[in-house]
Image 1 (tube, rainbow, N blue to C red):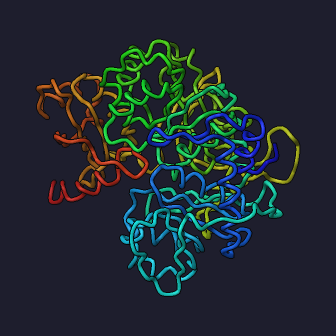
Image 2: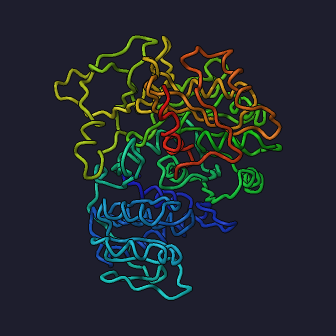
Image 3: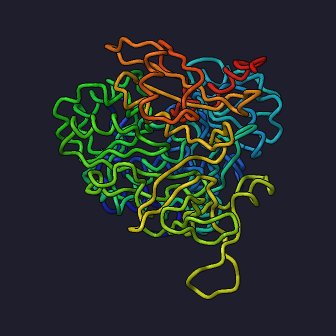
Length: 524
């Protein structure tokens, strides 16, 4: 197997051509068929003039065509850009113009919504439409091609594993999304590492519920293809649909973010006898939700993980350590080293908070067309072991962690989410855990709100469990039993509906914070 990400599919097809590769809406595709489709569409992309290193974007929900297009772009020697299907037209336009996309693959319905925004995408020369049930709109200077007509002979570009393979757009602390550039080597190293510690195998059936524009969601594809396993694509409406799919499709593995697990933990899982493992990343899984999942799924391995797009995945906690270290994010994944460093770059002592720094093959190439942000995150790190005088580029996460004497890591907080109140730096996660521990709350978010006297006051926004009968004052009194005065929320707001999510399914803390920015204006 060579080190190019699309070759995962071709190699699996050579080993087991009749094995199931993909499922979508109860339709299955074999590896041999998938490999043939990827090769044909790669030839089609090249025939359209897509050159080595140019960008092809895919703006679709999870379906066969989305997967084929992503890996076909790679096989053509170009760079794929998965665009989250929940993004609005103006957000899509930002991505297409930011990384100079040349070819866009989308559906007719989505194209009609995008039409006005695409006029300003000057580098875009072709749109490939996956369904032809209707008249194509006219966009000046842009050719529109039917997916079925996109065919050709598989190209053989002179791509090597250090070339760009993908650009993943991720929300920053401020401003518009920024594109993280990944090489084939990055993606292959991630697939191999995850497959090793999850012990994925060819008979796995991995349910993909996360968007493919999220590195954690894309990983479900690369991991499955690395192992020659089956991947089940799902665009769910309700959390209970996921549990139903586990039973009907005999799913063996699921990845999700903590807010989704918190919802799934409230439901009846039945036997779920096929489910070998579940994974959680993208934030801290609240202890009550973890405990409920462990009770509901006693024979299922639960992997708690930590990652950031700039280095994909950094740590995981072995399931057998959950009893002793349920709050830990574990140790470094295979083929990665994770350091905890002070601001001056020196190592922290055990228990001392510091910045998580990731070195190794998973460190991304940088941010697309943004030298300033790249220099802030991808910084030199002198090797502690090799004796080389040439500094290595590592990914500096901006996240505060600590490492215990046994080498296990514990997440404290993102630097830009820490609340600064009355001279103290307060972790919103710590407040949220106390709120969850009351047993009344389904979801909770703590954030800092501008306050003329305190600098920032603490606000908590929560939803209640269906059987809870509690008001804001009662919840505050419960918090007083476990938090010092400076960590108590100055404002608790109870909402009836699920808290808003960002495109990757995480609770949108920044959006909620912006809603309350004027709350304490005029306070003394």
